[in-house]
Length: 287
Image (cartoon, rainbow, N blue to C red; front, side):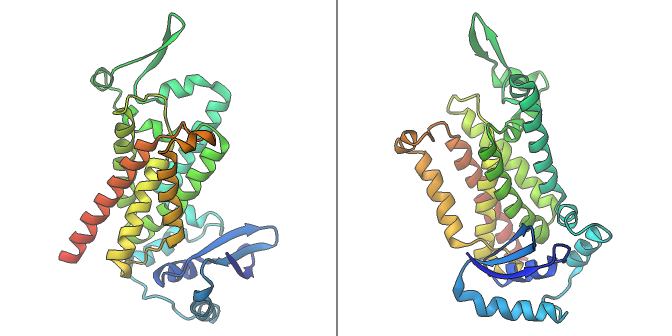
C-alpha cells in the first residue's frame, strides 16, 4: 500500500471513489486523526490515479452521470460526510448494524442469543446439548433460522474482518447494481451457506463470511465479464481470500488454532455468488 494524499475529514470523495473503481485502480481510504488518507495498492497505477485526482480537484466530471448516479447523490444529500455512504448502501449498512447489535447482545445475554439464532433450536438435556431437526423447525414456522446464523460472530476478530469485507464488496454491489441485487445476494448466500454448513452435521456455527465470499465471487466475475459496470477487486485480495479458504480446509490450520471454521459455508457462499454473477452478467450481455 502506498500513501497518496491527505484530505480533510469532511471531504466528499464519492465521485472520486467511483471513478477509481471504474478505472480498476486498487485503492483504500482510511480515516485518521488528521483526516482521510488515500492509499494506492499497485504503484504501477500511480500515474493513472494522479490524473484522476487532478481532474477531481479541478471539479471536472469524472464519469457520465446516469440516473443511478443522480439517485445516489440525492440519497446522500443533506447528510454529514461520514453518514452519506451508509445512506447510499442501506442493505449493506443494515446487515452490519444487525451484526453489531447481535454481537452486543451476545456479550450481555450470552448463550441465550446464540441459541435463539442457530439454524435449529439448541437445548440441554441430561447435561448434554440436544439439537432440533431442520424439517421440524421450518414446519413450526421458524423459517428465519435459515438466515439468522449469518449474524452470529464469536469474537472481535471474527466480527471485524467479516464487516470489513461486507462493506468493501457490498457497497460496490449497491452502487453499481442497486439495493435489490445486494439483498438478493445477502439472502441467497446467507441461506445457501448456512444450509451447506448444516449438511455436514454442524449446528453451532455462524458469521457473515459465507456472504462475504459470495460478494467476492460476484464482484470478481462482474469485473471480468462486465468491466464497464465499474466493479473492482485487487487480484491479491482474491488470492488471499481464496487461499485462506483453502488453508482452513486443511489439517494444518488446526495446528495454528483455525480448525473451527465454517468451511462449507464459505464454499457454499462462493458458489452462490459466482452463479448469480454468471447469470446476471450473461443476462446483461444478451440485452
